Length: 472
Ligand code: SAM
Image 1: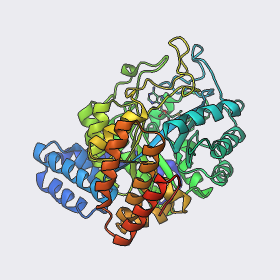
Image 2 (image 1 turned 135 degrees about the vertical axis):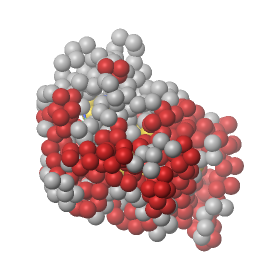
Image 3 (image 1 turned 30 degrees about the horizontal axis):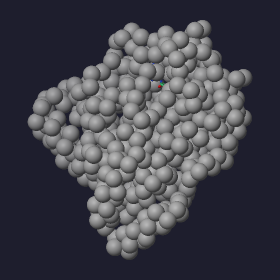
């Protein structure tokens, strides 16, 4: 039976409830009065439950779809302003004991080059990332208790935080590793991770079991209940996501929101972020072999509907997507993007040659971080390298209260401007810097509190003189 308070995956991601939701959404996809009512409710900016949000996703009345997109854009602006948080993935190891049929790391793939970074290699990779200007990383590994045990991940995090090269520093390490035990989550928390990210891949249990035929990841319930264990282990910020293309997107959408409702009901705080990866070509993987691929229009609708349904949850898009799609997605809800990414193990120091493919998926946006930063600013966004909340202990519900109190503009905007200033001075090309300096001047006026604004101006001048790492 559906029960969002239950700790059993089959209850909080209940198949009958999802099917009933999809039926209800389908029956009401032309129901203009109900859809308008739901849009009105969403305007309160308190989110929508999975049933109502699913009706919006199913809606096929063009004028109302337009309203949904506009509302998503407004909500995004209200909660996130113009800021876009920047990050890069760092692939530590691609050894894997699982059999995930969509992933090139699967154990039976004998032609992918298996690699695991040594601590010395990590220093080199992170130095290269710091030289690009990155401050926030997402660590990625395959699942392999022998080649990539938790101790290795912990040691790597320690190494990463210890590297101080020129003015560079990685100030927040998010971690995307396989579902694990409460004890291991506790260790990750102690190591000072930011968000623990784990993609559900698919919420459809039957498909999940087929798509993960072998290895520990086969256990659907263990995987689906991982966020509860992470929170029990003291991790406040968790990041959810599904791999779009594996199953019917409407099913995944309802499941994703039910997962968020479950976390909120049980732990008092929903996911910190939601990622929206789509399946891509990779070594040994042909994305067209999966029947449920979604076109760009549907993809953007999903993003807009997630934005409307969970206004406080950050949304992440990676370089799996093209510049064009990323540009559109930013309008409707995306708040974090990666830039200059390499998805191979060791790829920041040594870009791979053709026959040595250890990459996890083909990248569609190959621009450098500087190009992405410049592009964002030209679109009117403020690229942010801020990591202040996590370092000030504003995680979980404390971050959410800041967000809900509308204090983001007095806190996150100045932090974004100060970290952007650091980037411009230390790493940007002259042209990017010129655009950025003008943007900072203009955006300072958007800080509502006068005192905060003048402190930010003072810090910006100090950054110019060589000081670093200010935060509100
Ligand atoms: N191994 C970890 C786990 O078991 O959850 C996660 C790390 S994996 C490096 C990161 C994510 O990449 C996976 O969760 C999956 O959603 C995604 N991924 C795998 N194969 C992909 C493909 N062919 N195209 C796009 N994304 C893919």
